[in-house]
Image (cartoon, rainbow, N blue to C red; front, side):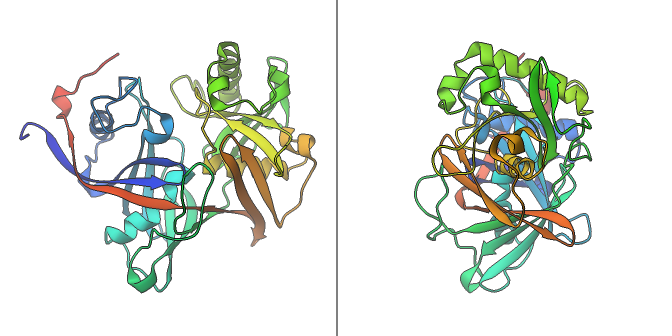
Length: 360
């Protein structure tokens, strides 16, 4: 194996996603070289990622790169990479709030910071968006604990709770909460809300696209006309949001909104963007909840305006995800409960950059 590159790696589940975690110091500093290494590691360019450790699904083709903080007020830097599956593209524009749940535990166990009492507060600088997130990690006896009584829909069993607090998430990518300048507008005669809060998204009333919004992820993925329409809307929304041509980007994300029917406050189907999420992205939940409390948006018009402090329960294909909203120092703060688990640690092997297969 001396003709392959060996890199220390920890495979972790964060929320309803999973992927390899790396120390920034273990990867090339040059972006193109780093991305080629990640494509080789994940096996991108094949729908099953058969020649790598990717899972052949967007929720399991994610990478977290962690290092010492480069800004005041944070403990660690977290760079997220969405690695495309059948294309050799690494997108570091968005954040991932599910993978974020595992950043604190990884950072502590990697020695980037010390455990502090029964619960350790890890202040995470998301390099993708420049935003700060606080993670409360259970550390009884000075060690990370993964076992507990918390459960989240979309993950079987129970685990230790990790509380995430998103600090002032508005304008994560574009610098503006409503980057198109409108709370609601028409694209292809369809009313949408373009919002950038933790994640750039396009919110659409499901019925406007001829579906109920209660379909399974598989049924929506198999609806070719719906998927084609969503992409047309997404591309135009990207331009209006100041993001340019988003053809090869994973943001903005289309989100179908409908009224709740299982005891929650609102029902959603979140796209990644060309496949419906089996549950819901944490960052997506933050943005959806923010839209729900903003008068004039698609979400607020559908369910009625709500005022913080409050907890919103968002229904998705696997259950519910709850978001707590309140104001701190005049800024909207969003809190979400997640769990994480360390799955595997060791060495992962990549082809040297000069020998990488560059599949079309």
